[in-house]
Length: 137
Image (cartoon, rainbow, N blue to C red; front, side, top):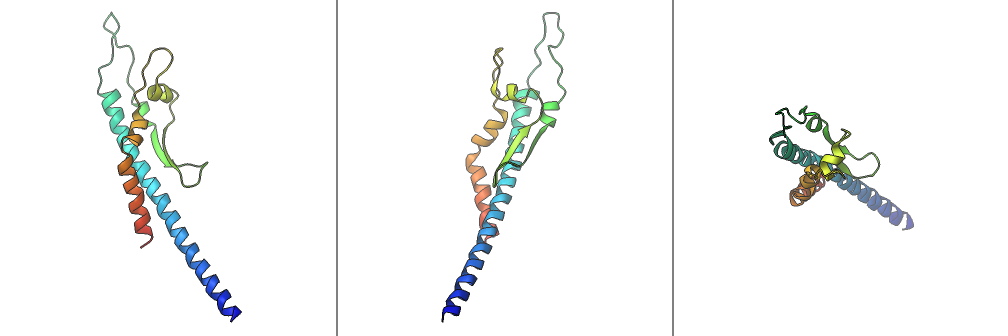
């Protein structure tokens, strides 16, 4: 009798562990897909807020700066190496923080990556939920 209970409990634990693993895998897949989605939105924001705007000119008519595409080219996404079940979009250029948040010299932030996430929260949650649901079928 006791052996039957132990076997039943072990089987139940194994099935719960398998289901938990499937949910975690679905969550990670959903987070990764959501980060790809947010990255696409961030790239569109960069195009609209930076690259389609005219370059300011000095009084002599020369451009104040040259656009290289480095900011847009360095946007990326992935799973966070520091936190379990966490994804991110990021930019590695040194001036990315100034473009995103502004600086003390009067440059206003453009909220390129922040808006990509926060203005699309419902879509991001939908992507994650769908992946979890698909992984547990």
